[in-house]
Length: 296
Image (cartoon, rainbow, N blue to C red):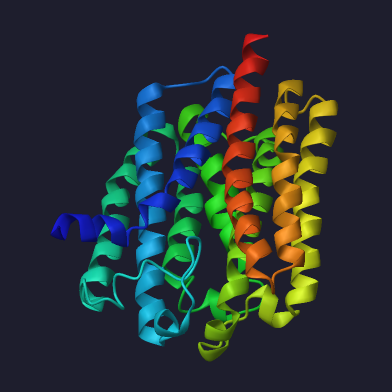
């Protein structure tokens, strides 16, 4: 039972995102004729650990600030519930989060040695985001931007670099949908937490620009995902097979509807579920598109 509690504190249901990000980054490298399965697995493992670290440290600060006690928990937001239930102490959670981050350090050093020192700035930025996201970034306007960068674009660039030893502008372009998607994943999940976030002086978009404007902003970013993919696939910067990602547009419509009716739980909750599925399946289909682009 104790081990199960430690695992649940990482919020494992959300770590699927890291697996999909690792898959997409690796398939882009494979498309560019550079792929090592062991590098992909090790880097993916490191990414999952860093994501777990983010989740745990965020849980720690949410509890310390009182947000966990005030937030309305949903399947998609409101924390793990482990600390409010007393199943772990805050100190135990903090050390678990820091421990997960520390384990990634030798992985990062290894890839700096075998792939190149240019990976170091990316890793430092990622580590900084992890450590200061909850205590600092969330209290500054537009924290969703940092989430989109740190758990959207950077993992794609990192997985690509460990395979190829370089960055490319084509990879930057291919990472932008992940930036948009993770940005919106966080944004929509923030709507139920606004009352609790006010008490912690957070500056999420639903608070800083209002729920109505935040919903419109969510819709614009969601549409931008598909416009971006379509334009760059037509320009042949990304393989035309990545247009498979457009199959998730119905999910986007349902998620946008949830955002626009965020005061109605009967519409917001299905919208949040569709949002999660859109984020995962769009990136999965992009990865499949890169694979098919290499084969055909």
